[in-house]
Amino acid sequence: MTDYTSELLDLEAAGVRYLAAREHSRYELTQKLAKKTENPALIDRLLNDFERRGLLSDERFTEQYVHMRTRRGYGPLRIRDELRQRGVDPSLIEDWIDINGSEWRARISEVAAHKFGLERAIETKDQAKRARFLQYRGFPENLIRRYLWD
Image 1 (cartoon, rainbow, N blue to C red):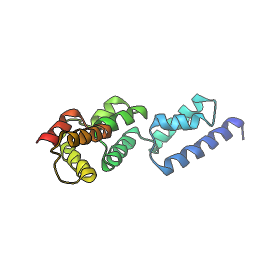
Image 2: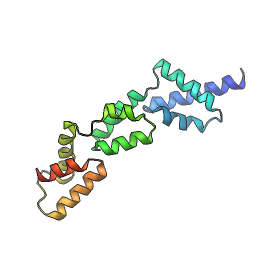
Image 3: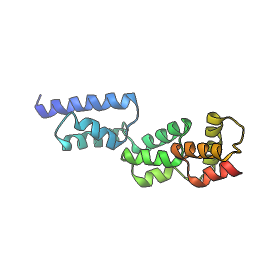
Image 4: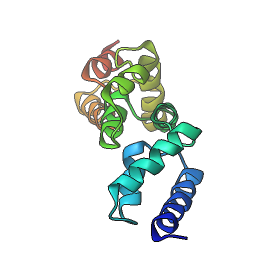
């Protein structure tokens, strides 16, 4: 077996292990595999094969990532930024995250209720505290205002 074939098999085994643990974007997997070889062409070839075989999919990664982060109480702005950091194509992100979608209005209320309870914030200090928390979580300003004053 040649060194090239051996290196490819080692990379493939590592890639499959990473993907067995969780979905990865192509960019994430490239970064992880780059630590195991100095041959970017080999990584590209392997990832193309993974995509062809359905083992790697940025679309599937994006779908699962959006659902996971939404369930954990994060808003669309934060999720969008995290996906960008993971190398997901902006058009794919926009397909999965509608910042003005009605589901975020319901979600912001759930996240705030979980953190602060159902009682409305009346004092300015309490409203500011909630606004900072929701902003940190990645909810847009217009939704935060609507949540606080509707």
